[in-house]
Image (cartoon, helix red, strand yellow):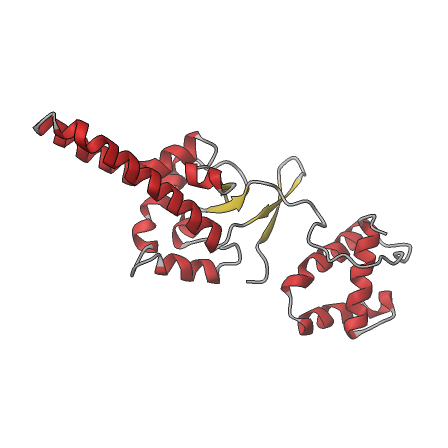
Length: 226
């Protein structure tokens, strides 16, 4: 994947920078939720079984709710977070950054039966590796994504190097493009970095690796770094 940053403009003109959660934190959150679900089910087994046939019926209802509705209930009524996601500082949101609603949550949770195939979330892992925002198959169909709860501060991924003063006369959009390039550099191959930097040789007066370095130095200047 090139990167996992998704920038969204809200109707109010505010830009949100959402950092998509990768496979490892999501797997850890799932394991926490699994332990919680299994513990809750086991804890209720003995009390319900002593009630006879009625208790066994209630037990199967509990198993159904814990297995299929736990995720939906938590995501819709607890701000997109199951207990596992809360522990890992993750949240389910709509693809446009809005809070997840009932039907998308139901769809993404039901489609776990596809993502889990052929075992150990094989389909889901392949989908996450191919999708630019690390979404499993259920997220793609439901129009949702899992993100880290802290919004990414602009410029936080720009490599720190000594700054150089930016040439005068650049528009705000051009300045923002320089910062965006510097943020993406850690996720680009050196060849791709040089290719993009060479397009701005008239601005930097340099090409190749030196052109890349100067653009990153300009970005540090724009961010107020020494």
